[in-house]
Length: 417
Ligand code: NIG
Ligand code: FE
Image (tube, rainbow, N blue to C red):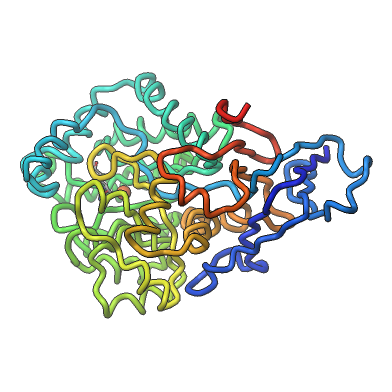
């Protein structure tokens, strides 16, 4: 089946010349093509065809993009979207001056969502997650990572991963599950960290990969969560079992997490709001993606990660919402892109690379998705605009017209029908 996506105002290829990521200056080159259409064959990008040479026999089906621009489907590479309950009470406490860390220490925060998740059934969690996934799809997201980390017991972590995997099999888009059992110590192990670490290392890690519930492991390395030494133990075992690694690190305090992420060649180091100046070149030279989460800085009124310094040292920078009920209750990747521009001074082109090919690298799918290159999966977002700057300039409006997965339109914005 040959489908022609005809007549886009622009094609943003985010071409990497076969490298499948962009570092430093390369983020600025998003390979804009005009006067061409894209031919997709059996879900794979087959060719770019000059509009002047299109004939009747070029395709079985034609989708007229009618003046919109087409780009790789957005990749949302860091979310905690599988949660229950609300933390609006904590939000109100923060508005009155309490800090996120104080609330966590007083038994709120991640632990409060943990209670809500533990008391929810598989079916209830499915019902909560479904519209959240659909909301990302409506923005042009074609791959979505979702972490566990709110169960924090053998039974409840597996339950959450089963919920995420239900959508991995059923959803029109790629869902990437990540095991985040090391999110925080649950109350029953507060005074016995060793026993919770043992549960993760000797029981959960082997069970989860054996049952194909996740291939990526994440942890929260922070003064109020897991120490660098504890993460090192988890990562050492996880790597032996065949997992790829991610790490929440340098969010509030520097406790040695970045060195552990680099030592284990993690796919990504996420947050980095308080990364030290000396550490920037170390991370920038590595193949570990710097996943920046400016929604957290907005939501917690916290400092922003040093995007400019990371890029000028050559880092592979990606952006994501970190969508979760406590530190970034923001399920909107477009807003994150806008914050990256306004608050972190990233250029429009750098932002586009950061939510496509580099985000795909953070979830280890960059050889298959994240750019419009011949041979890659035909995952696209089509925006109703003549020029791609419009998606940063228009705040609070969803300009996404079509979300396309493997060449099929899976979402058509009713506002543009
Ligand atoms: O990425 N930093 C740790 N975890 C999440 C917050 C989770 C929560 O507050 O529920 C984050 O910010
Ligand atoms: Fe997070």
